Length: 505
Image (cartoon, rainbow, N blue to C red):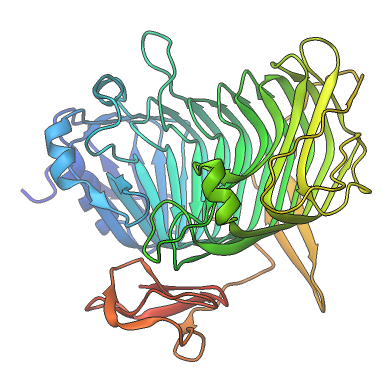
């Protein structure tokens, strides 16, 4: 029977909401979950209160006005052979996923667990396909809250091609069973998305706590505890020649970073001599990013700007990064580094402009602090003794001035409403994200005062693009400075996201 594992009943509520309860299935519950989501789409609720195994790919790309209550345990199958051949490709950095969640007005909640079964992949290393457990793909108005995730094979959560997405009160814990670090287990990766909020969450992992990938704009990251990570990272950007990467209008606030490699981090690839390079040479910018109330404990480098990420020093001298970095603010970055003295390392291969710091209180293990600056346009807005005078593009000179500072404090995780206000040259844009503690009968919500309009990009795409080749589904197809393919694969059209990025959808 098609719906043998699915029980659909009318709820007693006055709204007569349809509820679809998925029966436990630890062999492969994928078909039953798919059926429930289909039957209760457009106003219903799917309840997953039992134990389930996701044994095959789940593509749910047209959800609308639906609640998904995960109060039980969903476990990703550890059949590596199956996922190597069948995981859904996402056309960015060789990423794949097990479950795509797309559509509008989607609410996922319930206090349940999504277990990634990561040990199977950790033991194999970085070869083969490592599926992201789920991806918010081409969606809008999505709220994910009160969910636990463990042992993700790769990134825990990927937000791609989406707008108005909020993750609130998420608990992530991915380390190997023997206690060692699990590679590439980013908490969140945000790509080609606008108005995204990640708040009030607890993360223990082995890579970036949050990573802002290309074309992430209007992002709020607030009240996180991150342990064992590589920091909260803007980037990496500029990896692919001919593509334009931007990250702008970002507030990162009230963060506690413990036992990590980095704290507040910006990373961009250097340039390249090759027009088709996949290891640097892309262009774009990082603008209007604020790290505020950022508390570090035993963090190797609390503040990092690396404009030669994964690029040799000699290449960066000849081909500086094409990612411009400007209007970056550090407010109350405080605590302890794990190096003897070095606590700040800001090294730009081209000039980084309008970088400010106030309330900085950082010390290394020796109780003193070293602040390294290379190619910072002006140090006048920095409150630590970092001298960039005489440094020109392409050099590797480091300043070694030191000063004694002290201290640390602990952040709280209680914010319920936050907003980001960003001032541009001719207008002020407000990006807000309101978090609501919802019960099981609440309709999905993730609100913002800013909306995204999708439109045809024929008047927006650059004439420098190549109309003689075809971009794949979800790939970039236009934007200022873009030189890649402008034609889209069959069944997709080139749609405008912003002046610097259009995508085949």
